[in-house]
Image 1 (cartoon, rainbow, N blue to C red):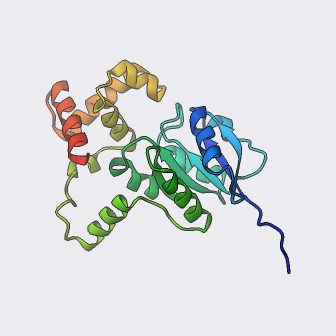
Image 2 (tube, helix red, strand yellow):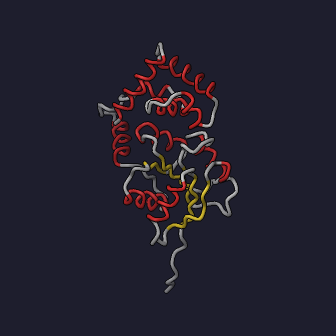
Image 3 (spheres, rainbow, N blue to C red):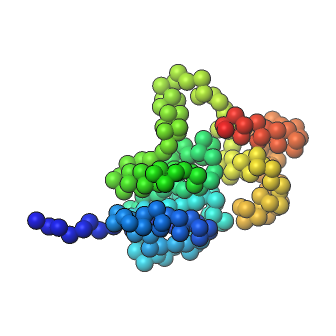
Length: 220
């Protein structure tokens, strides 16, 4: 009888906050299921790992990673790797878009330890992972009988980058702060805000701020 321990799944973490790396190592410290032997603070740093990882854990808020578009970039680079998005961005706004882009799961950084273990184990087995909240929302949409289906209809008009900017606006960040967060120019933020107002038929910056705040409140 073969009593050898199973080979742990290799995990590459792309996150510019070392505390996240240390936190995951602590959670799985006594586990033989996963090996966190790769850490990159940006998408560019992740181009040449020692080997293709089994799982890529990605924070879509990492500077210069292009947000949700980074998932497609990673799929091209690591075609056999599963991708788990671990982020502080609200799951109601971003989880489904990440799954559509090719992610295998979505997890909020505020989730309890047990949720992290469950997410990694599910993805390692080839399953998708989302919270019960998101799973229920998706099923409601499929069944087409939920009063929450059209909760945020205008959001569908926005690109992934525009939605991310609305998310930052809802956190009371100004253009300079958002530009720094996304590692793009302030002028680019101003252009995005103008397009957002046009798509949503908003007449002023204050109306955009009110929309962002109301959206955040309705999803909370």
